[in-house]
Length: 337
Image 1 (cartoon, helix red, strand yellow):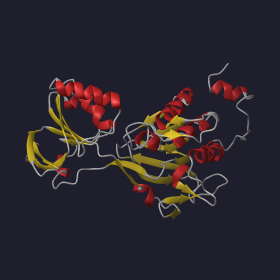
Image 2 (tube, helix red, strand yellow; image 1 turned 90 degrees about the horizontal axis):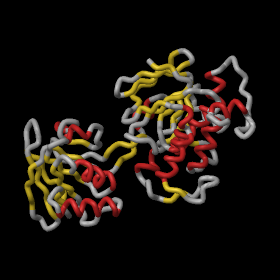
Image 3 (tube, helix red, strand yellow; image 1 turned 120 degrees about the horizontal axis):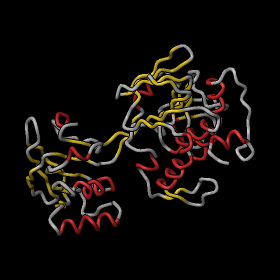
Image 4 (cartoon, one colour; image 1 turned 60 degrees about the vertical axis):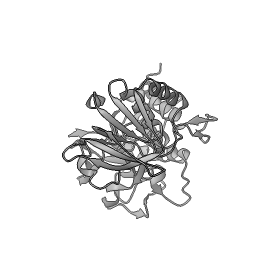
């Protein structure tokens, strides 16, 4: 079991800035997120969409903002547990005990929920009997690309994830790239590279069609595609990678005894603590009178929540507010001379 000052659930922009606000106060944190990389909605839903409400930055994309925040928190050497979901929360004296689906255990006096509008989960295939193949022959993300070597792989989707993995896995496997439309939404440069590989016979592009059936008992032997004109095609397939986007679910948070308002958590706007002492909610997932769902608002919320976290983690120390421009202690923590 790992002991920390603060456990942060959610690695979106607000969760990342929480690391900074805690770090400059000398608190150590750990970050847990259900996705395979930091950035939350910004990186998963609109990495290229311009953001205009970050002070001092006239315009940036979700990906650029994420990268800047990750750079900002580098001095604190915070450990991230990605592709993990918090399944269990228990109060133990003045601490909160956390257990994830990967059996990792943490304990801390403070828990910050920065989960946006909930956890993001892949939109799964809805064909009958697909569940029996999931995790063995059907995947919604790639954790270890060596598992996909020398295979016949059918990749479904028209966005960046589908195109990027088609390009990468084509280095050592046969790829069928399948999309329900003729137009792809991914980066033009990546699509251009894939078109070159199609000409060389390394990638086969099949559009506009959808998955109609999967053939196989214990493993997948082939799949059948159905085109818009009603025609069908059977292709040899060992593995399926599906990238149909993400769905948002509140998940186990709804069962933690927090004061909920629909799919948001009510908080005290003085410190963003919930009805459970030591559990805070910030960002889009929290609600209070006058709440604005802006990244800017989330930054303000974690700044105040971090003060209360300090008081709980260091009950024998007096919190002393200091400006980052003049505090030698803060400069030292940031590695500044």
